Image: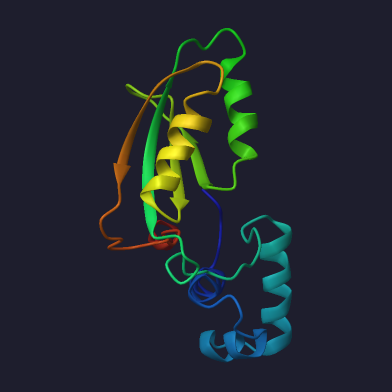
Length: 158
């Protein structure tokens, strides 16, 4: 487990909530002066704890009213299908996230499209036609209760 002190944990927590907060304000909030806070910030970036900064966009405001999770099962794992599938998914703009999974399905995709017609076209004419895809199972999101998620930090305080 990484060795982070309370200042660094609090910095990470603040940055998760507001990645645009200036280092001077973070320093004031955690009780450090700006220079040591800036050094810690750079060290956290260099160590890979901070992967980057991005704006959180509203999918609905951008016209993406249909959000689904799609489970995908491949025919085989020994014929290059997984690598081919991964490469294809990485090129699909509709897929915001993709995970390999244990259990009945091999992959879980998080997909956003403008309409149910677009979802149908995506699944039937693109996803199902990828080499090696055996079957797909879609689950329509009715309401997002929590997320996109934050990374829990409480285990670092033990």
